[in-house]
Length: 596
Image (cartoon, rainbow, N blue to C red):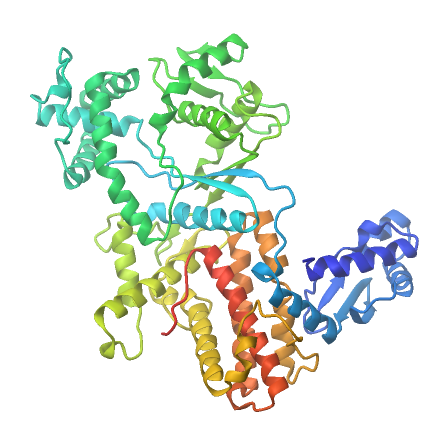
């Protein structure tokens, strides 16, 4: 289905052309003043300079040249040249009927689907997920679902951190604690044990200890660096320990991501890019891109248009070891060979912007990616406490993600919970808690920092996830009661139902029209969110829908209605409302319960 914006834009583009102006000026937008009109066209303002004519005169020319149509109800010009538009109620109802009968409420899938890789998550193995991993997981999961809904082939990669200094720190500390293990005997030729010499709790203690010690002991740090280099160079024992570390860490990472309802198609790490590094380095050297600078191998990525210095991209350190730039570039080589992606998206802390700018420039300059491959950096802000500083536990430590989820779930207050089955109550709190966390994050523009206010996010009032769920559960309850009282209209309860038109062009209250009009913007809202990589647009949209439904619910006594025609129209409207909300929250990454 066309969006309403596209339908109106076609009409006004013809009007501009009929009046002798550029048809491209006929783009229509949702009104910035809904109290005055539903839509507006601002093309006359843009045309004024081009045609050396007052925008008011141009706008009047356009209105006079408006083609005959069955969409526009009223059109007027407001100084200095805005065209205000209201559409016919009959058009709104026809459009809703098409949405009701179409798959995915009429959302038009991509005509030319792309292969998209989304790199998000980025957890380091041997460390528990903490609040700092929240935004990457939540935003990345939403963008994955959003692009899949739009019809693209999307491959999600967790991209584990398993190749840097943290591995060397763990290996070195283990060598001090358990020096007799065969992994540290360079002459050992046998098979290494299949069972790791440590558990998850051991790793969670070893890494912070080793990290802290390396900041105080230069010799310790140097030994860890040597261990890192030897592991990267292929030392058998150290590679075996790396496999153990990953094997112990991965199940716990998957469990925690599952609690967030986040999953990946690929659980590859930096280590998986290692086999691609030698050939990539040789290619860069053979083509004359890579050269030695202070012992390191680098590629210049500065451009003439740069207003600030851009450091070169480091391919290998002076000791020959790899760093983030190396593995990120080699991962692009791997992705190109395996998937030939049209686009690669990185959902990462915005403070990593310069790093990815250098990597992207290097990849394009050296031919690691094809010229047409789009490389996108979606940088996000930090999650802060009420003091405006990065979110911490009461003791000042970094809060584990599992603790955060537990805390939010404990804040969810449900009426009559003392009478509920324990398992049912636990599941309900998990559903609502997840909605609180995800919506609380996604309602903010990705690049913005935000305050994590647990009490606010868990509230059933205001712009929150629980409020959206409360609205949906209210609709489900209304529909269940109507189905019981009026079984003869049960066919109208299906948004995909066929037969006679269900919607009536005679809106009984203005809030019914407002809700209906907002529903017609579903495809446009989702499309804009997908084009702009902006989940917050979907949050704004469903908050608007929820508010308008609840106003309508208080204005219209739905359950008291007895007229069959009116009842069918009401059922069709609120069923479509529920379906639109359900699609949107699924994209955002949470679901609604049947009751609350």
